[in-house]
Image 1 (cartoon, rainbow, N blue to C red):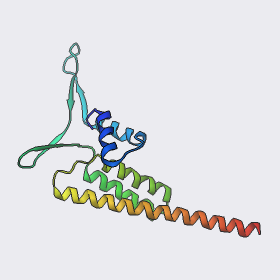
Image 2 (cartoon, rainbow, N blue to C red):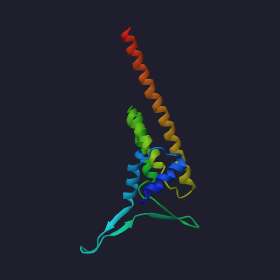
Image 3 (cartoon, rainbow, N blue to C red):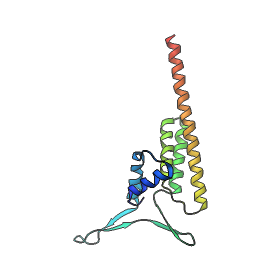
Length: 152
């Protein structure tokens, strides 16, 4: 997540049976760029590279987590998916829920509460994707029935 894209892709292939990494490349780049910075102190000196990360002490060890992909960010995206669903924009809502699932692959929970919350978000998104796809198929079937009636 912090620059080694090939290692990240290999881990995803082994852990979630990832077949196509193309949809995730933009997210991986965004995550990397959100944690990367260069500081130039003097014009004639090379820039210093910094990785911007926050740490949480969990007793025995420190967990360095991403400052871009947070529970708050995922909940905001989830709320926008709810709003789009309510407004009847099925395709846009479907896209948002799929994006949330993609982002949740790269979420690093710091405690059990965050782990349960991310599992809940994944469950909600999965159910919404399933129901929105059923809604799309239902609309397509209605259009086909109307065309058949018009042709007869």
